Amino acid sequence: MRKLFRYAGKYKVYLFLAPILIIGEVVMETFIPQLIAQLINMISKAEETPIDMGELLRLGGLMVLMAFLSLGFGAGSARCASVGAMGFSRNLRHALFEKVQHFSFKNIDRFSTASLVTRLTTDVNQTQNMLMMLVRMAFRSPIMFVMAFYWAWRLNPSLITILLVAAPILFIGMATITRLAYPRFRALMTKYDSMNGAVQENLTGIRVVKAFVRETFEKSKFARSADDLMDAQRRAEKVVILNAPLMQILMNGCVVAVLWFGGRQIVGGTMELGDLTAFITYITQILMSLMMLSFIFVSYVMSKASTARILEVLNEQPDIVAPEQAKTEVRDGSVVFEHVDFSYTGAEDRVVLKDINVSIRSGETIGLIGATGSGKSSLISLIPRLYDVTAGRVLVGGADVREYDPAALRDAVAVVLQKNVLFSGSIRDNLRWGNEHATDEEIAAACRVAQADDFVRGFPGGYDMDLGQGGVNVSGGQKQRLCIARALLKSPKVMILDDATSAVDTATDARIREALRTQMADTTKIIIAQRISSVKDADRIIVLDEGRITDVGTHEELLARSEIYRDVYESQQKGGEE
Image (cartoon, rainbow, N blue to C red; front, side):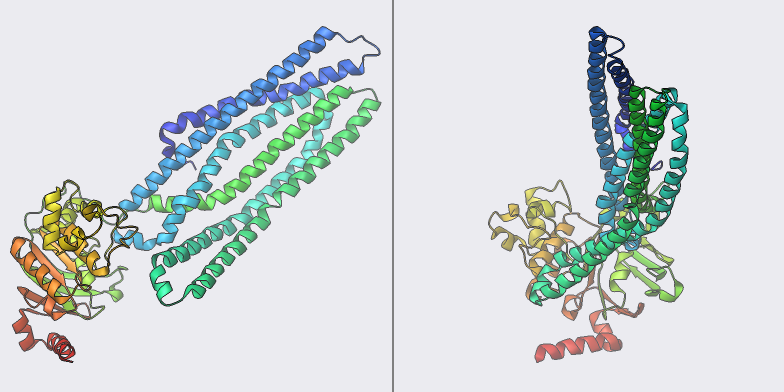
């Protein structure tokens, strides 16, 4: 919490004001029993001394005033603590989300999506509750203990020794509960990750689930996750619920002891009835302050796992950062790979790209073909520096990609990924991801190149039609063309199409390639495709096999000398004839 407290920001004033108000509340609460003791003593001696009604009214009015003051201080501290804790959680969520935005793909791979969602929601909520408890109970408890102990000691020092027996039992019990509960709550948060992952997969792939009639299987999978979460929560709660009965036993035991020994002193004439009543109130306040302390320990155990998981994200260092005096302008669209090796894990025995050497001129159209798993997508992900090379270097515009500001580099390199992603909102809003200042004419021009303008204008509302979450209102081919148009609006120096026309018919694919060739002559175009027809007109075609470049050449040259390329071509030609 000490490391996270800096995220309170401007809300720190509320978090500092709450304890000050709590001091006023506790002072009022602990002084009221003194007035009650005086009233009881006055009434109990009525037979001996006539009751002074003026004094009686003064004490009663003072009690009412202190009760209202205590109420006001308490309400004020509660509001300040709530505002401060909620402001803290808002800033913490913002910091977590901003940190994730700076993560490289490698950083994100270390955390599952479901785990990041849990850390941004459940873990932050747990931490917020802990902070609110620290600001209120953690200050109230020791102040209440000291004040009540002071007044109880003044009333009867001999009865205070009862606490010397109860306090060690309480502290040993709390320490044991804390030690046993922490690992169980850590495991509980992992179960939250698993359940969120099951929900996320189901909702993301709901169409596939229904198409394959797998609702029953998904229900049983979710039920297992929910059962595991319930079991983990039950194991954790089994420990912390021992706190309440422990406190009740100690509190009731102390009250019984005070009544027993205090009653004997009243009978012996060494203590007055009002003082005993006040003493019982103070003992109760002391024990309640210790109970608050025990609740803080329980909350600490529950939130410790959450704060640790939050700090894991905040302390994660992005693998890809801008160097000092980073280049902010990409000169041209030339791309060079020099002895490039790449591994997702960094392990030399798990390299997916091996000794890649190729030079691409600015404005050239390059085809990239290879079997599934040959490393095509891995290769192009190194150009915008989505990952860093394991060995060698990649140059764009004549400079190593590690010399650029990543934002400037990625602004010059447009990537239409194999998995197309659109966001909720209108078509126009989605296209402006490529250029937020694009005019309607520029948007329409990009869509014409991507062969999307005709079908967009046929939609109700045209470019203002809402796509729904993830673009559910358009087909796979339409989604691909919209993603191409979005990339075109960046006016990139390098444009990468990673199997971006796989859901488009061959005639439309040909029109897209022709439009790119004529209207983006100065842009380097790298086309990854499974169909030979999509790359046959490229200036050069790179053949990739098991992470190595086996050949580079034109369509005719590769047909003559590359066995891999020829096999792919002949299999597709044979399939077309059949």
